[in-house]
Amino acid sequence: MNKSYLSSLLILSAVLTPALLGQDSASTNVAELVSPADVTVSSSSPEATVDLSSATKPTAAGADPVVPVRYISAKPFSAVGVDVKVGAGGIGFDVATPLGRKFNLRGTGYFFRYNTSITEDYVTYGGELQLASGGGSLDWFPFGGSFRLSAGFMAYNGNQLTGSATVNPDDSFTLNDTTYYSSATDPIHASGTLHLGSKAAPTFGFGWGNIVPRKASKHFSVPVEIGFAYVGYPHLSLSFIGSTCDEFGEACQTVESNPTFQQDLAAQRSKYQDDLSALRFYPILSIGFGYRF
Image (cartoon, rainbow, N blue to C red):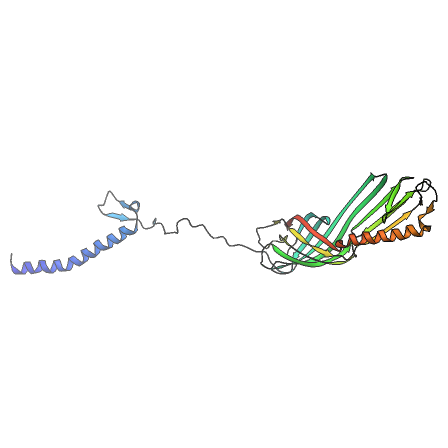
């Protein structure tokens, strides 16, 4: 082998070696990035062919797609919610609308009526309970959730209790710790009406549940309310008609013309008034079921 031929081989080796090394490195890097299933070998060619189009992009394992929470508009009067409820005021309902993100304007109404009649110790009692009220309130949700504070007014207070009693002839009854006997010919009849406070009153309360939920996906709610209305002292009217006698059925006298009876009646009315003074704080306690339209 002459020197010129040896020199040519050395030069050719120097030129081809880097190219071959670079090709091996590139093939190794590609093979590391794809799975064995992505590498196919053609029967007509001894060379491996890499399919990069089916390579899977890396994703976080177990990650769920994040769905953003949508809220309804908090502009005044942009929505309306209603509920039906039962509580100390009777059977009622609410209608509410937002005034802002954390404020609602709410109207309330109650109604209920009940009649009964019983006889006890020879005295027949009849009574009727009438509950009727209506008003409005401003509800504040300080934390933006279901808890609320409420302040408002009772625009109409028709809550009252009426009753009557009839004492059988010749039977006794007690008034201001004094015993009287009903006349055999003109028996005693009593009637009374209890008005639970003034016609209008301020209200205060707190509770849970927003009948105008701010989340767009939520429509139902279970509102609970606790509070009171300061209706003032109740007013009791109590009257008697008929005649009373002594224990022998004699010395009969109408109650209107008997000054002792009238004094005992006034004293008994005052006692009843004091016993009922706690009702100046009329309770607000209710639970309901609401829906936002």
